[in-house]
Length: 258
Image 1 (cartoon, helix red, strand yellow):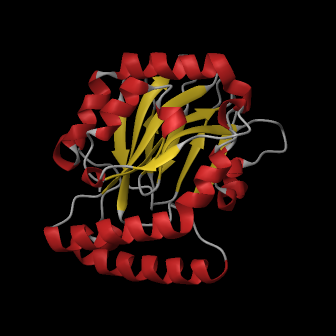
Image 2 (cartoon, one colour):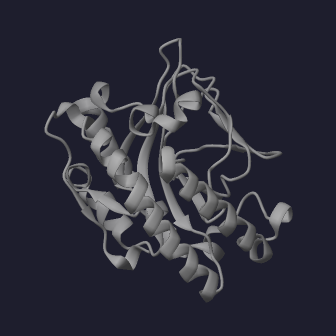
């Protein structure tokens, strides 16, 4: 999720700080891990790993049909302009499947039906999108806005020469096609693509594993903040996808997603 403007910003920031402070007692505060075991934390994500060639094929279809019309990240989420925008023409583009909430962008998921089916079976889904990084693009150091979630990356299109890397806190990760990683993006992190080719991954955010009481609190807070303040703007801006002026359809995802 992102910061909000005006009164929404004050409400959202206050609530997120309160919940993050509360969660520190469960997740270890500054001693919390950087990377997480997928099988222990969210085993349903392994369904994506197992189907990565299908997901890659659906992404390739989207890129082949409308790559130039896929919006840059800050065009969907303006608060991230600092880390997304570039003066040299190198872009970070996103093809949104589920906006935070989660809210399904039906027109987009209809173009990736198997990916959408797999995502629909992931408990506690927050959002999901394809992330496409131009050659030689550097995403500057930044932090995710909340400790309530963990972020999953599945490598789909990764250059073999000078594979892109990611630093999370003081740890480093190098993507590979068909391989995945789960990490806490509330730690400072940055991405560097020194290759002459693009890098594309599937990003999925899920509520981090918690005991039942804090889990229910986080689940409710995420849904409230995302659907009331954030997702409507994201979905409206995501309507540029695929060159359509009339936009992507949307519908709230099933409550089973969390």
